[in-house]
Length: 260
View 1 (cartoon, helix red, strand yellow):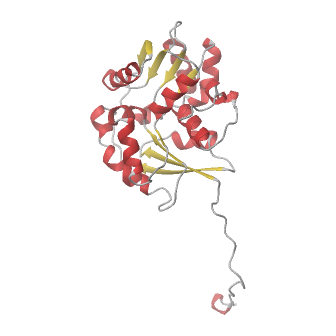
View 2 (cartoon, one colour):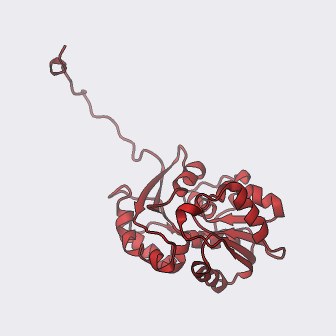
View 3 (cartoon, rainbow, N blue to C red):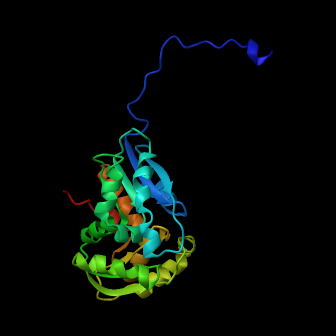
Protein backbone atom coordinates (compact mmCIF):
# COMPACT_ATOMS: atom_id res chain seq x y z
CA UNK A 1 0.00 0.00 0.00
CA UNK A 2 1.23 3.43 -0.87
CA UNK A 3 1.50 5.88 2.04
CA UNK A 4 -0.76 8.26 0.13
CA UNK A 5 -3.52 5.64 0.36
CA UNK A 6 -3.40 5.49 4.17
CA UNK A 7 -6.36 7.28 5.67
CA UNK A 8 -5.45 9.58 8.55
CA UNK A 9 -8.26 10.60 10.86
CA UNK A 10 -8.38 13.49 13.30
CA UNK A 11 -9.27 12.47 16.86
CA UNK A 12 -12.78 13.29 17.94
CA UNK A 13 -11.54 15.55 20.72
CA UNK A 14 -8.54 17.73 21.49
CA UNK A 15 -6.07 16.38 24.06
CA UNK A 16 -6.10 17.76 27.58
CA UNK A 17 -2.95 19.71 28.34
CA UNK A 18 -0.99 20.09 31.57
CA UNK A 19 -0.09 23.63 32.55
CA UNK A 20 3.59 22.60 32.32
CA UNK A 21 5.39 19.41 31.35
CA UNK A 22 7.29 19.69 34.66
CA UNK A 23 6.39 21.63 37.80
CA UNK A 24 9.55 23.79 37.93
CA UNK A 25 11.86 25.26 35.30
CA UNK A 26 15.54 26.07 35.81
CA UNK A 27 17.15 28.07 33.00
CA UNK A 28 20.91 27.89 32.44
CA UNK A 29 22.97 30.46 30.56
CA UNK A 30 26.28 28.76 29.89
CA UNK A 31 29.41 29.50 27.90
CA UNK A 32 29.81 28.05 24.42
CA UNK A 33 32.93 26.26 25.68
CA UNK A 34 31.38 24.80 28.86
CA UNK A 35 31.82 21.04 29.34
CA UNK A 36 30.61 20.77 32.95
CA UNK A 37 27.54 22.76 33.99
CA UNK A 38 24.89 20.82 32.08
CA UNK A 39 26.28 17.52 33.33
CA UNK A 40 26.35 18.72 36.94
CA UNK A 41 22.83 20.12 36.79
CA UNK A 42 21.41 16.98 35.21
CA UNK A 43 23.00 15.01 38.04
CA UNK A 44 22.17 17.32 40.97
CA UNK A 45 19.10 19.35 39.95
CA UNK A 46 17.01 17.70 37.22
CA UNK A 47 14.23 15.39 38.38
CA UNK A 48 10.68 14.34 37.61
CA UNK A 49 9.62 17.65 39.15
CA UNK A 50 12.38 20.03 37.99
CA UNK A 51 13.40 20.55 34.38
CA UNK A 52 16.73 22.10 33.40
CA UNK A 53 16.79 24.12 30.18
CA UNK A 54 20.01 25.55 28.80
CA UNK A 55 21.20 28.10 26.29
CA UNK A 56 24.77 28.90 25.24
CA UNK A 57 26.34 32.29 24.62
CA UNK A 58 29.52 33.20 22.73
CA UNK A 59 32.80 33.05 24.60
CA UNK A 60 36.41 33.06 23.41
CA UNK A 61 39.45 32.02 25.43
CA UNK A 62 41.79 32.94 27.07
CA UNK A 63 40.14 33.59 30.43
CA UNK A 64 40.96 37.23 31.06
CA UNK A 65 38.90 40.00 32.64
CA UNK A 66 38.58 41.62 29.19
CA UNK A 67 37.21 38.47 27.52
CA UNK A 68 34.91 37.74 30.43
CA UNK A 69 33.40 41.21 30.20
CA UNK A 70 32.59 40.68 26.52
CA UNK A 71 29.82 38.24 27.47
CA UNK A 72 27.63 40.90 29.06
CA UNK A 73 25.89 42.03 25.83
CA UNK A 74 24.82 38.41 25.10
CA UNK A 75 23.08 37.78 28.41
CA UNK A 76 19.65 39.21 27.56
CA UNK A 77 19.44 37.50 24.18
CA UNK A 78 20.63 34.24 25.73
CA UNK A 79 17.98 34.38 28.45
CA UNK A 80 15.28 35.12 25.87
CA UNK A 81 16.09 31.88 24.04
CA UNK A 82 15.23 29.71 27.05
CA UNK A 83 11.60 28.62 26.43
CA UNK A 84 10.70 31.91 24.70
CA UNK A 85 7.61 33.60 26.07
CA UNK A 86 7.29 31.20 29.00
CA UNK A 87 8.13 31.96 32.63
CA UNK A 88 11.06 30.34 34.42
CA UNK A 89 11.38 29.72 38.16
CA UNK A 90 15.08 30.65 38.25
CA UNK A 91 17.86 31.50 35.80
CA UNK A 92 21.49 30.72 36.53
CA UNK A 93 24.38 32.34 34.67
CA UNK A 94 27.22 29.85 34.78
CA UNK A 95 30.52 31.71 34.95
CA UNK A 96 32.11 32.53 38.29
CA UNK A 97 34.93 34.78 37.13
CA UNK A 98 32.66 36.73 34.77
CA UNK A 99 30.15 37.23 37.57
CA UNK A 100 32.87 39.08 39.47
CA UNK A 101 33.95 41.15 36.48
CA UNK A 102 30.47 41.98 35.16
CA UNK A 103 28.78 42.17 38.57
CA UNK A 104 25.93 40.20 40.12
CA UNK A 105 23.48 43.11 39.87
CA UNK A 106 24.31 43.78 36.23
CA UNK A 107 23.81 40.12 35.34
CA UNK A 108 20.47 40.08 37.15
CA UNK A 109 19.32 43.16 35.26
CA UNK A 110 20.38 41.73 31.90
CA UNK A 111 18.54 38.44 32.49
CA UNK A 112 15.40 40.13 33.78
CA UNK A 113 15.27 42.28 30.65
CA UNK A 114 14.23 39.06 28.90
CA UNK A 115 12.60 37.24 31.82
CA UNK A 116 10.99 39.89 34.06
CA UNK A 117 10.90 39.16 37.76
CA UNK A 118 12.75 35.84 37.58
CA UNK A 119 15.15 34.99 40.44
CA UNK A 120 18.70 35.13 39.07
CA UNK A 121 21.55 33.03 40.48
CA UNK A 122 25.23 33.67 39.85
CA UNK A 123 28.03 31.41 41.07
CA UNK A 124 29.53 34.19 43.15
CA UNK A 125 26.31 35.21 44.90
CA UNK A 126 25.41 31.52 45.44
CA UNK A 127 28.87 30.86 46.85
CA UNK A 128 28.49 33.71 49.32
CA UNK A 129 25.11 32.40 50.46
CA UNK A 130 26.52 28.88 50.62
CA UNK A 131 29.56 29.85 52.65
CA UNK A 132 27.33 31.72 55.08
CA UNK A 133 24.98 28.73 55.27
CA UNK A 134 27.83 26.46 56.42
CA UNK A 135 28.92 29.08 58.97
CA UNK A 136 32.13 30.20 57.27
CA UNK A 137 33.74 33.53 58.12
CA UNK A 138 37.34 32.63 57.38
CA UNK A 139 37.85 30.95 54.01
CA UNK A 140 40.49 29.54 51.72
CA UNK A 141 39.98 29.83 47.95
CA UNK A 142 41.16 27.63 45.09
CA UNK A 143 40.81 28.83 41.50
CA UNK A 144 42.10 27.44 38.18
CA UNK A 145 42.76 30.97 36.87
CA UNK A 146 45.77 33.19 36.54
CA UNK A 147 46.63 35.72 39.23
CA UNK A 148 45.23 38.50 37.01
CA UNK A 149 41.82 36.84 36.81
CA UNK A 150 41.87 35.67 40.44
CA UNK A 151 42.63 39.03 42.00
CA UNK A 152 39.15 40.55 41.43
CA UNK A 153 37.65 37.46 43.05
CA UNK A 154 39.80 37.90 46.14
CA UNK A 155 38.58 41.49 46.34
CA UNK A 156 34.96 40.37 45.88
CA UNK A 157 34.99 38.03 48.88
CA UNK A 158 37.05 40.36 51.05
CA UNK A 159 34.66 43.25 50.37
CA UNK A 160 31.77 41.05 51.54
CA UNK A 161 33.46 40.50 54.90
CA UNK A 162 35.21 37.15 54.49
CA UNK A 163 38.68 36.73 55.93
CA UNK A 164 40.79 35.03 53.26
CA UNK A 165 43.47 32.89 54.88
CA UNK A 166 44.89 31.36 51.72
CA UNK A 167 44.23 31.99 48.01
CA UNK A 168 45.63 29.46 45.52
CA UNK A 169 45.51 29.79 41.72
CA UNK A 170 46.53 27.14 39.18
CA UNK A 171 47.48 29.58 36.40
CA UNK A 172 45.33 28.16 33.58
CA UNK A 173 43.94 30.38 30.84
CA UNK A 174 41.61 28.04 28.89
CA UNK A 175 38.32 26.91 30.43
CA UNK A 176 38.38 23.76 28.31
CA UNK A 177 41.57 22.73 30.10
CA UNK A 178 39.99 23.64 33.43
CA UNK A 179 37.26 21.09 32.66
CA UNK A 180 39.91 18.43 32.14
CA UNK A 181 41.49 18.65 35.59
CA UNK A 182 40.98 15.16 36.99
CA UNK A 183 39.02 14.44 40.15
CA UNK A 184 42.18 13.23 41.87
CA UNK A 185 44.01 16.43 40.99
CA UNK A 186 41.13 18.59 42.20
CA UNK A 187 41.11 16.75 45.52
CA UNK A 188 44.88 17.01 45.87
CA UNK A 189 44.97 20.74 45.15
CA UNK A 190 42.02 21.29 47.50
CA UNK A 191 43.92 19.63 50.35
CA UNK A 192 46.90 21.91 49.68
CA UNK A 193 44.75 25.02 49.33
CA UNK A 194 42.86 24.67 52.63
CA UNK A 195 44.45 26.68 55.44
CA UNK A 196 44.06 25.02 58.87
CA UNK A 197 42.50 28.13 60.38
CA UNK A 198 39.81 28.48 57.66
CA UNK A 199 36.18 27.53 58.27
CA UNK A 200 35.61 26.38 54.68
CA UNK A 201 37.17 26.07 51.24
CA UNK A 202 35.67 27.66 48.12
CA UNK A 203 36.61 26.06 44.80
CA UNK A 204 35.88 28.48 41.99
CA UNK A 205 34.96 27.93 38.34
CA UNK A 206 31.91 26.29 36.80
CA UNK A 207 34.17 24.44 34.35
CA UNK A 208 36.03 22.61 37.13
CA UNK A 209 34.45 19.23 38.01
CA UNK A 210 34.75 19.86 41.73
CA UNK A 211 31.12 19.26 42.68
CA UNK A 212 31.61 15.54 42.09
CA UNK A 213 34.36 15.32 44.70
CA UNK A 214 33.24 17.84 47.34
CA UNK A 215 32.20 15.11 49.78
CA UNK A 216 35.57 13.41 49.32
CA UNK A 217 37.38 16.71 49.84
CA UNK A 218 35.44 17.45 53.03
CA UNK A 219 36.47 14.11 54.50
CA UNK A 220 40.12 15.05 53.95
CA UNK A 221 40.14 18.07 56.26
CA UNK A 222 36.85 17.69 58.15
CA UNK A 223 35.40 21.06 57.14
CA UNK A 224 32.91 22.22 54.50
CA UNK A 225 33.90 22.73 50.87
CA UNK A 226 31.79 24.76 48.47
CA UNK A 227 32.29 24.68 44.70
CA UNK A 228 30.74 26.98 42.10
CA UNK A 229 28.42 24.34 40.66
CA UNK A 230 27.49 22.89 44.04
CA UNK A 231 26.52 26.36 45.25
CA UNK A 232 24.41 27.19 42.18
CA UNK A 233 22.73 23.77 42.16
CA UNK A 234 21.88 24.19 45.86
CA UNK A 235 20.51 27.68 45.27
CA UNK A 236 18.39 26.62 42.29
CA UNK A 237 16.99 23.60 44.12
CA UNK A 238 16.05 25.63 47.18
CA UNK A 239 14.47 28.41 45.09
CA UNK A 240 12.39 25.70 43.37
CA UNK A 241 11.21 24.52 46.76
CA UNK A 242 13.33 21.37 46.96
CA UNK A 243 14.52 21.17 50.57
CA UNK A 244 15.82 17.59 50.39
CA UNK A 245 18.96 16.99 52.45
CA UNK A 246 21.60 15.22 50.35
CA UNK A 247 24.71 14.84 52.50
CA UNK A 248 26.36 12.60 49.91
CA UNK A 249 26.82 15.75 47.80
CA UNK A 250 28.46 17.71 50.62
CA UNK A 251 27.62 19.71 53.73
CA UNK A 252 26.00 22.54 51.76
CA UNK A 253 23.31 20.22 50.40
CA UNK A 254 22.06 19.68 53.94
CA UNK A 255 21.44 23.39 54.56
CA UNK A 256 18.37 25.59 53.96
CA UNK A 257 18.58 28.58 51.64
CA UNK A 258 18.45 31.95 53.44
CA UNK A 259 15.15 33.75 53.28
CA UNK A 260 14.80 37.20 51.77
